[in-house]
Image (cartoon, rainbow, N blue to C red; front, side):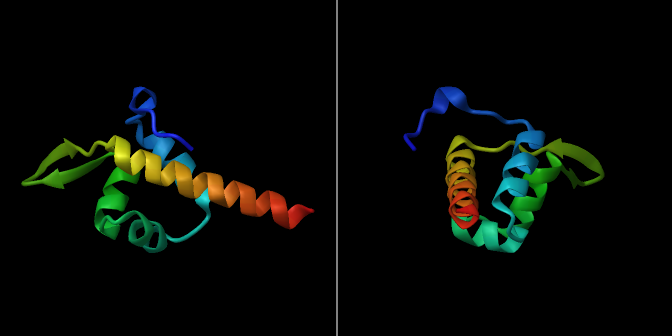
Amino acid sequence: MIPDATKHRKDPKYVRALYERIGKSQKWIADRIGISERRFRYLIAGSREVEGKTVDVVLSYPEQFALECLAEAADMAGAMSIK
């Protein structure tokens, strides 16, 4: 894969779709892409509570790219196990 920041998608639904494609625990994924498990949970939710207020949590493009790489690897591993 080649990075292309023009394809940046900040939607938490996209994060959840990548998470499901990867098929591993939140901790496993967070450890692989270098973020905290808490941050990953916030990305999946799309927000967090700060001092009683809901604050949006936005996926950065580097985080997105790392998740896409893991999802692609999972897809390829799944395809190879079918053969």
